[in-house]
Length: 368
Ligand code: AMP
Image (cartoon, rainbow, N blue to C red; front, side, top):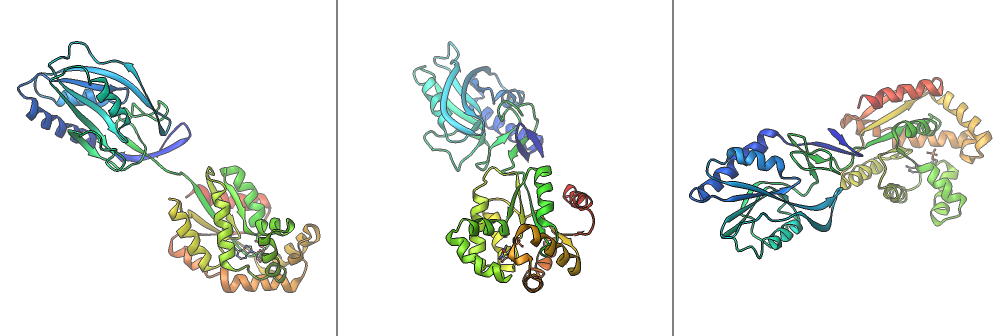
């Protein structure tokens, strides 16, 4: 994985794969232009490496020239294609073969064809090292293709992300999201919320506590709050469909997050499965589930203490607390197996100072 500006990119094509494709293209074109002296026109800036390696492989008489256009600004094509370096002189009656580094939507190509439209050349052909067939508008035939690639943003081998990455010998693909998504697991009072406060700062994550979201809704008298209150007051779990929908909304509210800490979610197998499916649909995943372990006596002591200050009714009554433990034992504890099967389960001793526990969690996260 490499980083350019604010984005991460993962290896996609090796130097060998790229040079192999170029060799094939050069041989193909050589067969067609053996008896001619074509002018290869490289499209700057991206094609400079391609042009160089291509010419080394081209065995017959040829000339080389360049045009310069600009269209990409960052990750998405702006659609504005400017001519910064115009067509070469004296090309009338000559065979022109455009050497493009990449063709995606075809907008740059349209401008290129336009550039050469009144030049009375003998032949006008297009060769592109990379070709995104999925998004190409199909307006012009592409005569020679090196490698067909999926519609993912790439850098390296002449291609840039905001001008960086052109010097890489290989091609890298944008890693859609380089995220850390953590599930904090543990009984009520285990310290999930407290630790989440530290971890979210350290790793720049968005903390979602389903309990907090419910309490916020109760405080503001929303429909969701009214619905959840009856369950929460008894120390029971709020029904899955309500909680899952709410969680998904919270994630969707933060499209730019570097990752999430899920605190108090999932609490049932149905929630865990829903979370996996939901994240997968967004090209995301749970990276680790970390359980904070402490025994019931300590937890009851902590919760009653918290209840004195927080005013949380579910923290002030031992029978409600015990009911929450029972809910945990019957519905949430089985998730340990669910995440162990995925090799994502980590257990951390939740007894000690806040700082000690943060360090234990950090050690697990840094090893991911
Ligand atoms: P917490 O603050 O995490 O202890 O949550 C307080 C209460 O909110 C719980 O006892 C449940 O009634 C409800 N709750 C929080 N998260 C969930 C969840 N994932 N599924 C169902 N109910 C939840």
